[in-house]
Image (cartoon, rainbow, N blue to C red; front, side, top):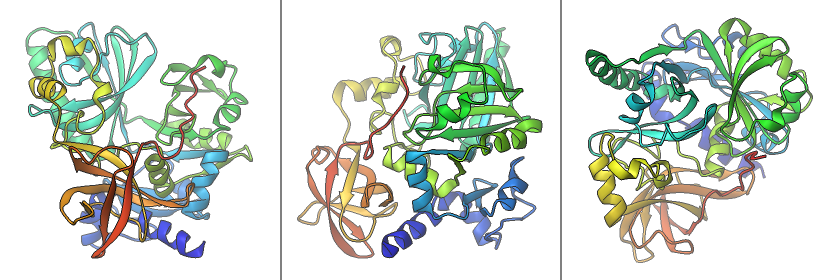
Length: 407
């Protein structure tokens, strides 16, 4: 058990290493990251007071774990409830009668087809069909769209969207964008999340199903709440004014079922749920079809493919792709990002994009891209870890069953 715990700690301390590598090279990485060059969420002092180990991540000082181990924190979320500070992510709103057509020119999803106050995962694509970023999009109404994008992609996303927004406005289109830097974002996740939140609000959460959005008060604090998350568990992402973020966190922490959770457990949870991490499993050279996200391309959008890279994606859907994202269970040491994937006779057919020891399954899990013909469940392969070829098998994802609340 100790050896496995050490594997988990080593695995997730490397979480998002590319995101904080520049700061590390500059000597900025510390157990309590207080470098003035790092952004801090409103909850920074609260994290430090709770014993968080702070690390640079995507230009922010973020908690990777608290006083409990990453293994303990991961399994706690699977059986109780956990709070994640995800305020480093970028939320913004598009308003105006042309908001939906504008956004649909940049993403693959059928946003117009969503019911009011419901949302979906989607992706921004480039001219070659590659993924600029993945995003959660909520249609509040026909003229109001709430969007959340990844922290590490904030600058390029806002520049990309802004460039196209300027072109639309120059044609007289009515769409305006507001970035919500005045708000924080908390994720309350786990099987007891609904019970905890329900005790603090008059809103009937049984009517708030997966991917639904609503505005209401929690302990007198006005919030925007979406029933979603990045763990595979039931849960909520709660947008709250910065001035109330600490107070809301303290209210939620008032329950004995709730613990704080950092980036380390968050990554193990999302990997167990088979969810992608941008920069690891997705990038601008990978299309949603190759990534196993063909379902994000809405049925109506397949009529015209009128978004960036639409012709490429149309062709991939018609003719297939040469590589696919798959999941693995492996022996030996856990595989890491960039570990080679080999056939039993030693031919390289792909590369691991995410891998770690699973705290819940007590097994090594990983995902990566393999050549066509090697992507079926049950296929025997090898993963190269520190020069050693370890036995691996392709398995279906998610690795751990999801528990989204659908009513």
